[in-house]
Image (tube, rainbow, N blue to C red; front, side, top):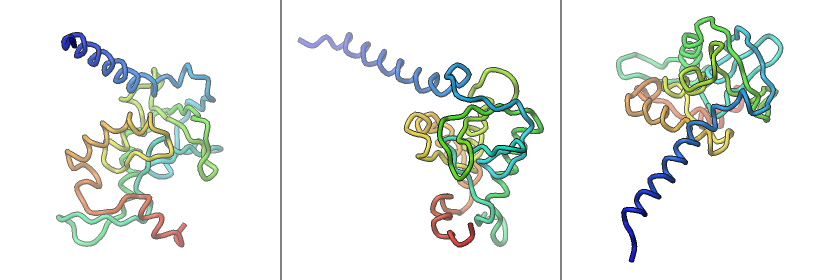
Length: 186
């Protein structure tokens, strides 16, 4: 005979543990042993790339609109530059504050793939620049980060899409699709 109460409680505990790992695991950069860059005041190159004067950092798990990528809004005449908005929103979020980046152990087009945070406190989702870029609607989660980050940024992605923020309020294509169709512009 199956004891349903016990089965349901065990399933609930498993989900709670998995949920906890989903939110805790991506936030242990300070104790994970990877190289730390910063704090520094960044120059914002685009919606998913920051610089510190010598290195460039690609935000892990984030793919933002490219500079020159078109977007159309129903209340605007003509196309606008989607990448401009992605960069401007990240720049406003950082607001001249110092940033610390945690190397995630991979490279991308001579950039350090990193998770970057504003301020000098403990890394959190509230200070995660990549999470903000996705939440603002000017970026999407990408596969280059692995399944843990894809899952971690899923909530920000779903909230941006549901609220029709950023690109979700207009008409554009995913950055990866635009890059593939415009390789001659790179």
